[in-house]
Length: 381
Image (cartoon, rainbow, N blue to C red; front, side):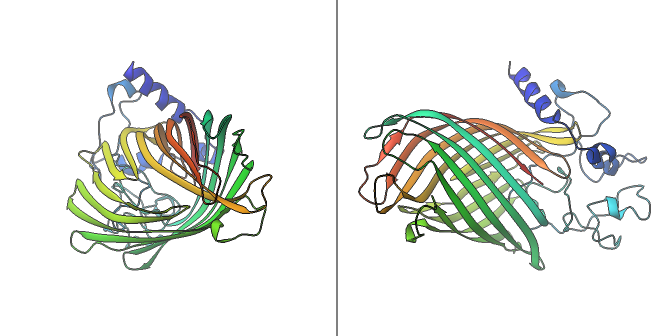
């Protein structure tokens, strides 16, 4: 039953329709790593037997990209075996078409999954869209009725190198939450978020590296003049210690500016015991990923995640004249499938939300919401 479930998830992710451009271009993973000498620049893995469709296709090491743990990778990389002159325009490993300056992770429009290591930085612009739905659940006293949530988030991220090996990421953010219910208290039907995230990542000095993040945002229903209740000033500072190529220690603290002023650790370990498995055992958000392989013109990861999640918004409650601020906190657990299609990534996941508690800055009593099923999907390109 377990193998059948994994097979179905993999087929769903790889079976989504590709664009005409994707169908017309050769598979870059295969083009780069297959050559006449049978020598590759990355170790290849046998695909799990229950996923074997074409035993001749190479499977490249599958450490999961997309995170930000560790310094940028700028180690020189030789030309692919047998690559003809002028190959640079099609090869994201080359630096600006200059064959004298090939790097693993230079700025470029794409990054091939599996060769760039567990946490590469994707330089340049990335567009982000996420959507989710939390099924109706009963509000508990003093609340009543049912509440469901639609979540929509978008962003435009830009990653650049300030000076050698110092990486700066800034992300324009926008989002909305559509609330249906509860019967009481009487909440607005929609709230919105606009933010700008600034993240600075240091190079590695011996085993050490660090990150500094600041994320101001406005969060409100936009029905009244924005006050201090609408402003969230979030930030974190985190240090990383590389114990071994397989183990990274994460030691940091985060500040969340909500109804409560929340200080929480940003800490744990990132463990890569082999080329298929990556475990980010962190708080407040953990993820364990298993690399399924490169097939169907994409690289695929099966993952499970756990997260402590807190949001807040300035709201104008119907029937009341004064502004208020609401804080919504919960714990989220999910299982999903993520796929990297050379020029875009996508994911789908299902999960469960529990421990839901909503509280107010002013006199309105706090209330809880029952556990609920969650579904989410997103794309980055």
